[in-house]
Length: 282
Image (cartoon, rainbow, N blue to C red):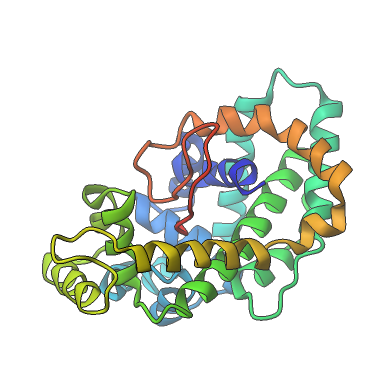
């Protein structure tokens, strides 16, 4: 289900209409819109809060955007901009679908999102607390955002349990199945920080001397993924197998269209269409 609701949420990061909506309220430049839009449910927070919640970013990169973005747009303005841009993007991808399809998919996804357990999940909680959207596409996107951040909070908790720090996690993934040329600049880590992280990973048995993942680390990260799934299971258990299956049918054509704008090397970690894979929170 993550592979279906994640692309719906991700239009806020990659669709031109989403970026235009952020720029319309003064958030020019990709990262201003990203940090303001994603952090806005938390209120006018500062860089340390967001660095902790988002997990994988280098602190100086976050500090370049926060708290200064709140001088350009308030959290309320950023929230309106991100919802406006996301709805406009989804409208482009769903205009051929009947209204009944959109109403049903929004209702089921919203119901699933209503069952998230927010204890210990800060980003999931603040998104779940936002007002209900007025129209089906707004409800669909907000539900996807809530489920996405809820799952991400659980993933971060599982990563913390490994004892790895954020740059170590990202560096390891780029030796396993991701791309350093995309992830390192997207997360703001310097070459020196990256190399030191790899050295620590070798010392801890997560990478070989040749910088390949060890069997131990592969098994440990598989356990992280399993823990992430367990922590995200509540909404689907509540929705039930039959209705979850129906939601999957309804989401598939929407997710497929949304995926067309996500760069292949984007730091979201979606597996290739039709395949299974691990996650790395965006």
